[in-house]
Length: 279
Image 1 (cartoon, rainbow, N blue to C red):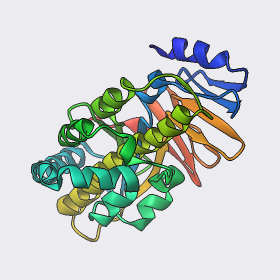
Image 2: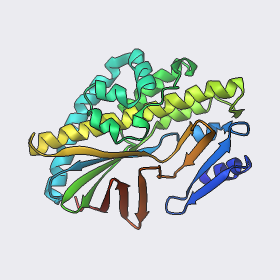
Image 3: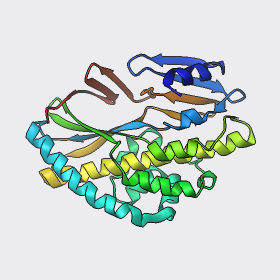
Image 4: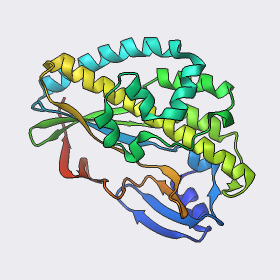
């Protein structure tokens, strides 16, 4: 199901809607009585972007150096992913970004600049088929679909990491049925939403943490490196009054991402205008 089809389906729920023409996305909030858990929506749940700033001039040479050390670090980590087993998968489905930080991928400050601190507490791993834990491991091991880009922002180098749950989310979503949010099945599936979202946050935080390590490897331990934001483009959550659906809509109460042509503009406390590097 494409973006238009999902938009048309949710529009029938009679809620307030806001569109984002830059990203061809939408934000929608619906009364709990009318809200639904849609399997099509969960296939791309918590697709999002992390931003890591490195205080180095964004020359092609520096970009290539950072790429080299990132690949070296990532190769070592991916060899160890399998060893965490299905017990480790259950932990990251529950803890989200906290799992990654506790595993030494980044730090507490990274969680502070991540939407919802990168953790949905309502996640319920018992609703995930155990067979899908293996799919989760394989998804963590494979970063071929992760989009990593490098940008110039003033005199800084910024790396963006775009990733979600990919095959794991799709495998889980295909096994659920459209349900009313307040039904028994709907509440069960809401625990699934939490797991899939936490998985994506854990995955992005792991890769962001590796990028931070790689920058220290490449430019020395004294170089300033920090994660400046993590924003979810597609997310679903209960805000205490309504169910909020955000599909390909990179805007929150304190973060906003826009694009124009090949440029990005990130607003979070400070403004970052980013243009692609030549590296």
